[in-house]
Amino acid sequence: MRLQHSRRSTDAPLLHRFVLQATGPMARSWDPAAGGQLMLASSGLVVVLTLPLLDPAGWRLTSLLVLLVTGAAWASAHLVPWQRLPRACTLAFPIFAWVALAVLGYTTHVIGGNYGGLYSLWFAYLGLTQSPGASIKLMPVAIAAYLISWGGPSWSLIARLPIAVAVWLILGELLAALIQRQRSLADELRVLAHVDPLTKLGNRRDLDLRLADAAPGDTLVLCDLDHFKQLNDTLGHAAGDAVLTDFGLVIRATLRKLDYAARYGGEEFALLLPGTSTAQAATLLGRLRRRWAILHPEITFSAGVATCRDNHPVTGTLVEADRAMYAAKATGRNRDHSTAGPLSGLSLVPAEVADEWSDRSAVGASGSTAVAADGSWA
Image (cartoon, rainbow, N blue to C red; front, top):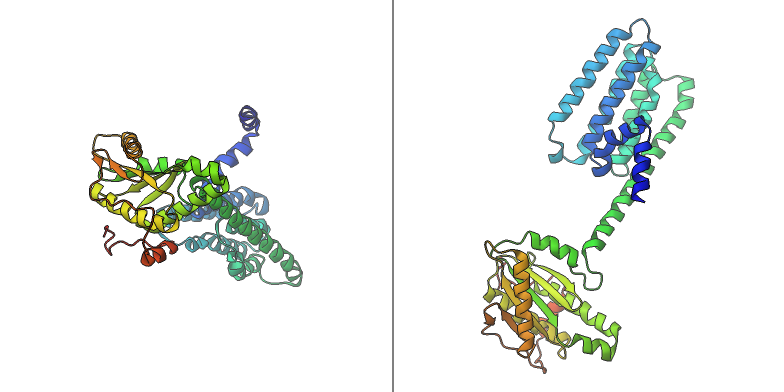
């Protein structure tokens, strides 16, 4: 299939390949500034190439003026920091083009009216780069410029105007709605590609991306639910999925906003805690155990902790956390280990849990973090 696609691209007409390359930046990023500059240059080129046919006597001076105005506008657009400005500022591109067409029609005795097709192209630009409604907002400007470019209103022009307006609106608004839908679908696919659907945490792919940005001093924690296979075999996979969903909920309620969690695989979960020491990670795990025991006192988990450091790959830190987790399982489960051994000062949660209604309410609030105001661990 790739070979066939490549062959079709190579066999495409030269003009088709040129258009694809020229419009590539706007099509890939929906950049209204790049699209506006391209449209300005294209509109000016169309006018310059066709003026000799419409005005054989005075086309030279008019073409020179069009080239100068188009070049100045195109160069000025390159100097504007469009990335720092609201997207609505790029509405200046179609407004400038319509005003230029009106001036051209007024000064050349309705020759500018022959470029009515450019109005449709600019409404297509609005649909591709702006949100729905932009075409409606600019419609008065387009109508005024269109009338001026034909030398003012006339009965025949007024009769044709509703058709032109309908085409412009349908073109601009339909494209805008389709692009908005496409962006929405792209956002949904992006979420699906990076979020585990069961736990609503990051998935393995997203975890790899986050680990690539881990810095020295960040702590990595691996948690594994104890005897999870036995749970699945006894109660069924539906019950196991419910446990995984609950564990993801408790993790999200316990972490700070700057922390990150992902489902590492199966019943294993990875936590990335920026700027967190091993002692602070132990505090987090203690809070996580207390809250988890409220929902499922019959199910425990074991955790391994390792801290990123200079001149040590993050993959090595992940291996260390994995070894620490299995050391916790080997010494009885339901406990936490670091690379240096068992985490001191940790009181394991017994099977019978006392009433902890404050923690229960914290678990139910998905955005709760239970940390100090400065983001540090209490």
